[in-house]
View (cartoon, rainbow, N blue to C red):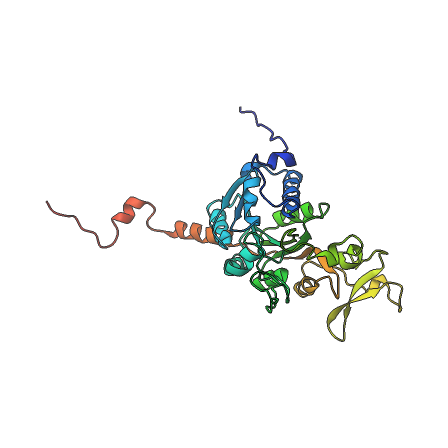
Length: 342
C-alpha cells in the first residue's frame, strides 16, 4: 500500500519568484503582489494548481513575480487566453491580471464576454486611472478634466466605472479593494477564488509617477473612515470616524443617502443591510465614488450561476455518449470515401 504524502502548507514567501520586481519604487502593485502571495498561503494553495494570465501594461508583469504557472499575453486578450486554459484544464485556479487601460479599452470586449459567459476564473483589474507603462496618457477610467500627454487641455471623456461595467456585463461576483489595505485585500482575493464563476475584483491602485494621490480624497488617513464603507453580508452599511454614519434608501427618490445615527430620529434599524445577492443594491454600491457618498469596499455582489466550462464539457460528454463513431479510424472511413486503384 502506497503511503499518502501530506502536502506541506506553503507560506507567502513560497509564492514569490527570484525575479527582480521592475515596478517604480512606491508603486501600488507591490502591495497587491504582497496581498496575493499572502492570500495564496492563507488559502493553502499550491504553486502548481494556479496560473496567472496577463495582457500588456505595468500590471501585466504580475505573472513573473508569482511562483505559479503564468502567461504574459497580448494587449487586452488575457481573458481569451484564460478561457482556453480553463476549458483545457478546469481543475486549475485561473487568474487574469490587467490594468484599466488593458482591460477597459482595447480589452473591454474580451472582458465583457468572459464575464457574461461566467467562466470560472478571477479577473483582477488594477485601476490607477492612467496609462502608466506608456508615460501617463489618460485611460478609460480617468476623470473628466484629467490633464495628460494625450489630453493637455483636460479629458472630455466620461469615465467608465469598472464595477458598474462588470455588473452590467453579467459578472456573478464583484468586489472592490484598495492596494494599501493589507488587512482586507487578501480576504477579497480569497472570496473571489472560492466563488464558482467569473469573479471580478477592482483594486484601486496608486500610480506614484503619473497619477499620484488620485484616490486621496477617500484613502488619506484623516478622511478614510468618513469616506469608506466596508460592506459585509448581513451587516448594516455603517461607517465614520465615530461609527455613527450610515447609508439609507430614500424611498421618495429611490436613491441612497448618508444619514447620521442619532440625529433626526435615525436609528441603526433605518440603515440598509448588505445583501450581496441583491443586484440592484450592488449597482447602487458600485456607483458610490467617495465624493457624495463613501466608496464601497468588499464583496459588492455574489450570485450562483452555471459556469461556462462546465456547460461546454457537459455538451462534449453528451455528444460523445450518443455518437455512433467513437474512434478516428472509423471516422476516416465514414461518408464519401474511396480506394485508389493501382
